[in-house]
Length: 400
Image (cartoon, rainbow, N blue to C red):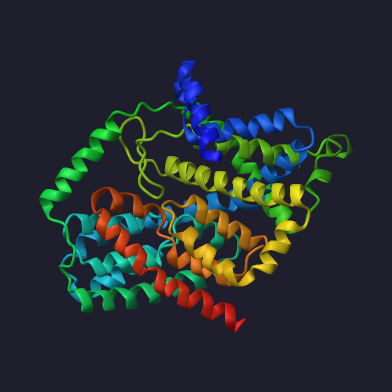
């Protein structure tokens, strides 16, 4: 039903000539704004969810991203190129790159595989160990839990990679250079046809809101009444709520209108001169995470609003199946659905077993280039990742 509504809306916008808005991300933004504008009942709930997502999550994710990308740039080591001659060390190196927060490391490994440089076991290793952009959210909110999940993924990925290479050999399903060149050319031509609609002029406003919001987010984390700091007159108008909502809305807008040629989450972003821009990379990935966190918050809050305690009762009644559902969600390409699972864990809705199962089954954005350039290998590698996800998730579930 949702797909039918989105498709009908997209066709209607294209028919009216508003083709820049005929995109699923932009339609979701339009639907959210419509609910906020025309439903006085839902407006406070939506504003509160947006503000909470921004001040409790976005500000810390942005800081974590900046630190991580600075360290990544400082290392300056092209591990992807060094993997080809590593032989038995390919699996642990791939697993290490996958365990790095974000999808950049995993995309490096998948790209090297599609070029015929590394083994199929390395692909399985990286898809098991990667948590994608959901890792930034978990590390920002619960760093010890995040470190434990990533370490578990690294160990599982390394062992699985070695076992797969032992069973199948290192040349199993390895694509030829001709196959890679053909698929890469087709993908490049498809991206060249896309015409981005840019709102880069809002970037300075984004930064202007984020900097003071980091201080506000830290104050809120220490249970400080931030509204009171604005004085009695302004405090009555809930300035913290509106600052958070404005920041979240700006992130949502920039995410919805992000250029389609900027690559997957975690990859380098260039400025107008073609130079790598770390600030733009932080902004792009922060906007992506924020958008899915907002939708995750809203999915839960709207569920409680319309069903009362029904949604919590459902999770309690079907608790044994929740880790399985989280694992199945992990099979969905991309980081968005996985961020929703982490958000639900942080809100106490799903157990930690579901978090582990989703993290191991989650392939992040690395699955996109794998599907485009080596679809059979991508599907098989994803299926292989299900076994350790089931073992770890239900091992934790029954142990707890």
